[in-house]
Image 1 (cartoon, rainbow, N blue to C red):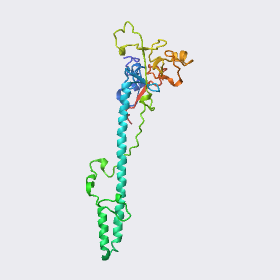
Image 2 (tube, rainbow, N blue to C red):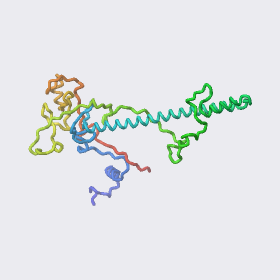
Image 3 (cartoon, rainbow, N blue to C red):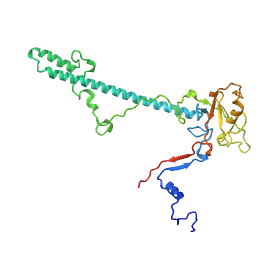
Image 4 (spheres, one colour):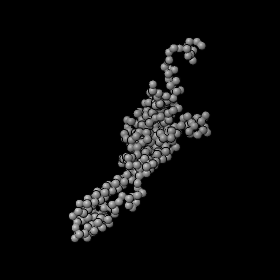
Length: 310
């Protein structure tokens, strides 16, 4: 084996390439990987399913979705919010019951204190009055001036259904030492899965792609298997990830950004329908990427794996 062979192991220096190779194979340490073109979705693909859209819609921020996929996502979030609201209502009801129990316990302690203080001064002449007070206390009528709604039917903590509410020692959440988890009030807003901004169904805009003419080699092929699928309806330029695109909101037509800058921006008139356009009617379409750093903002992904400590 020569000194400069590709797999030479006779060197005394542990090179950087060997460190990266061994770290990748060992399964320890952070691993960085650069995205390739195959790892990036196409410009006409849904941001959720990563497949070409059948019924494309776009958010106000320019992210493309398949209508079926974004509706399923929206309904799933709605169900999640309803579940969180039910949990929040149960928590409020439980706190209200605890407050009522504390008020009832405080009332019982006042009754016991009153009976204990006045038992010594009760004589045989007013024993009938004492008997009536005890009867009223046991029935839950309370003393004069007390609130009967907060009084309990019995002073015992084992009466009625309370015997079934004792904590189970094998359930951690039911033990007296377990602290309840406080659930915050859930928000009813639904946010975009990509941009993180508030999303409403009425804000989604239908997108209209213009089909490109088929070549002789692509005749008979399905749309999803074609290399060239769509084109600009004005300049007839082919649309791809390397071509910045813009959506005209009134009609949903997808054109190239270059076409908008050179032909539409000056007069702000729709070239196909003659409608007057506004700034809010121009939506830049977020591209998937090409694998080149000049097109994408971030092409590297980092995976945090377990690290070995010396």
